[in-house]
Length: 383
Image 1 (cartoon, helix red, strand yellow):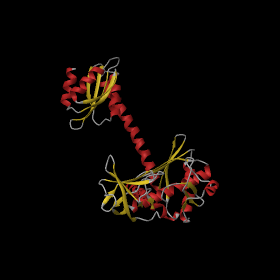
Image 2: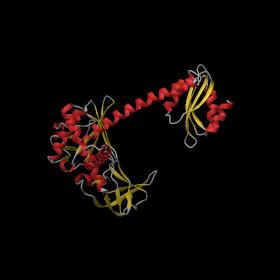
Image 3: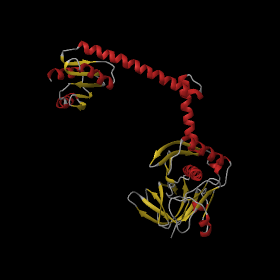
Image 4: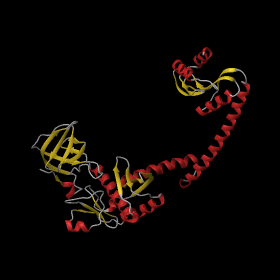
């Protein structure tokens, strides 16, 4: 006996009473089968509903051979009557995302002829994969058209047309379909075969925001949000932008200009520091000219700075140039150079002795150690 699918006759129904037909043991928990249900099972890219059967949580919902399995952690007695209630806030969010995705996919198909070849309705983000390439400007125009139709509050129609009507409908589908086909139509936006739940009117979607586009498998992948998710995302961005404007003493609509100015200033400072470091390294290299194996401790260097210092010193010292930067609490970064030499066995022994990690080419190695300076100095003096 197939489960009567109440979510098709009324996707806004949240509570119902049903009889338990079966309760099957699964690898984890149980699958409760009812004679009827409001719980939508995972399908068509839309996740399954969650909610309650009496006081037992339903953690997921799937369909198997026409029957809907309600996943629970404990069994429910066969033949009993249960009161079911879906998590409506989550369901409505999924309906907003799904209906919004249909409108975007339909408009792109109408304008550019591209097919939706992949759809993922995640907990945080919605992604759609299209069969052709789209620019950010093209997506901005799609977004404007879709939102215009949303605000016109067009009616969404989901139904099973007869075979003759279906044959004449220009509907989208990822694969050839036979038998009864459920169609979701949003006038002017989309006609698509779909088994999911949708809003009654586009105005309930509220807003669609296309967030990003990147090349993917010969086409593009688009990230988008609809409804309450889009509102929350844009509110978070506005809050972040307000903090940036306060930090930079810039007007809210001028933060990009202020950040670019700050980035340019930072880059100039980096170049200045780089030049000063280079001069410092060259001066140190000249001081150590001809001294053979040397151990140098230099404060405040990045890993790249340590590397550059070792390269400069190895050219003049005439032996092994070992440069360390750090402190006894946080450890030390190191770079060691020995032109025309082989440091690989030596660095393995050092890492073992000084609780370090790293390596490199025969004549140049770098990494970090967790030892104190006295330990470092003693090891290099003996080796």
